[in-house]
Image 1 (cartoon, rainbow, N blue to C red):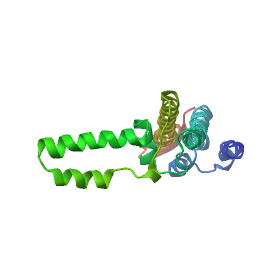
Image 2: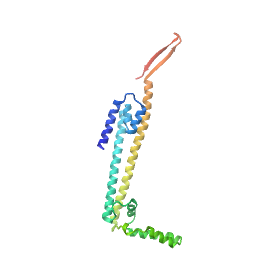
Image 3: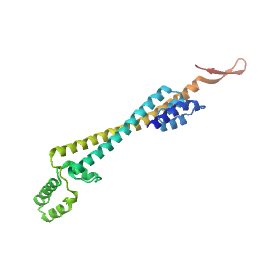
Image 4: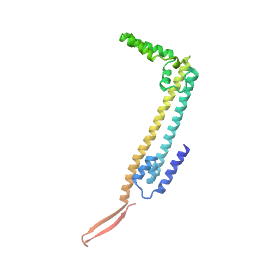
Length: 223
């Protein structure tokens, strides 16, 4: 992260020195790579600082939150192993399942009740009921038991924390993308303004002189 910040600062500092004939296209290219660099290239250092600072803050937050998501995920997986004998590296669906039910037996019982209501009571189809139960019944290898409600609630709390952190991480990534987009748009508008100002500040004019039957040529500079 420190190396990335150093590179960003170095780019912002060196861009104005490298800018001979300023081009709006180059400015937009720089801005697409590093928000603020396009503004620095055009000489708008205050804007450059704002976009660069926003980039560092949002990118730093995204990286930190992503690390926290990974840490919490590893924590609840280890907790599930210790408290409910769930193997490490189980699939996401299984970790979601053990969040919803205190034990595999509780899940199997609920599944049988739901299947009975649907296939037997509603459709009077006992064969489909048995087929569904046989297909969806959890085996001993996939069993778990939190033993106490406290253990189960603690796991659920860790899972909710992970989900919240993931939401914040996604928002931080969206902020990084938005900063790039806004910086690119601002660079395009700033480049157009610089181009207009350049045309206004230095103008060659030609005026006809009907009395002397000629013309006058001049150059106007506005500052």
